[in-house]
Image 1: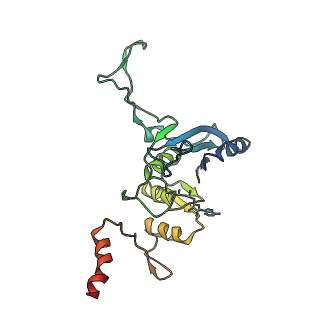
Image 2: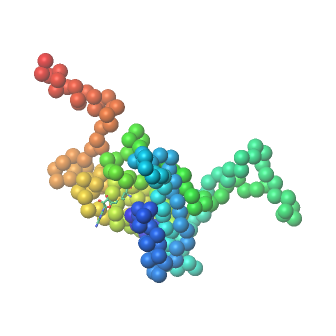
Length: 217
Ligand SMILES: C[S@@+](CC[C@H](N)C(=O)[O-])C[C@H]1O[C@@H](n2cnc3c(N)ncnc32)[C@H](O)[C@@H]1O
């Protein structure tokens, strides 16, 4: 995946490939941060190796002297573990430490799970929270965000919510349909009504499953 806006580009790819990609990109762009998106549970429960619990993200800029970085829009709580406010006594006038900070380069954000409302049927759907941080940091309202491997169009969904413009490219028709629905662009595709599939625990899903049997009786 790559998202790009105003001279800032984020690349995500498999952990195995990323080192090669990193070396390649260094010749073209400036890699400012190597981010680890870490999550709580691996999709595959590895038994003979250490299962992957993270995905790497390269935060690159074209011009390190001129790029968008909205630090104030992405601040998180600066957890110290202390119950009382900590005072910095090294300052000429003792000052309370800031209670918020720009996130470091390790981001703990849960993966998208079936029971989450944002879930779509795609093997590598990215969480809204991940894209929110990326888009808020690296673009301003009205900017154009590009995702050339759009999948379920999480990038576009978040870009739209945040008032950015969006261009997404996706090769699989099924995922294009998800994007059209998720971004409220169209209600139909080639005559097909675009609706989000029901979850197995939705009452309507169970009614749908049992109705034919009842009719047979
Ligand atoms: C890692 S997924 C992206 C997931 C996405 N970020 C999301 O939140 O759902 C990559 C997507 O790129 C699409 N893709 C692969 N090759 C492509 C190509 N040459 N052009 C456009 N899309 C492509 C795949 O079909 C897949 O849905």
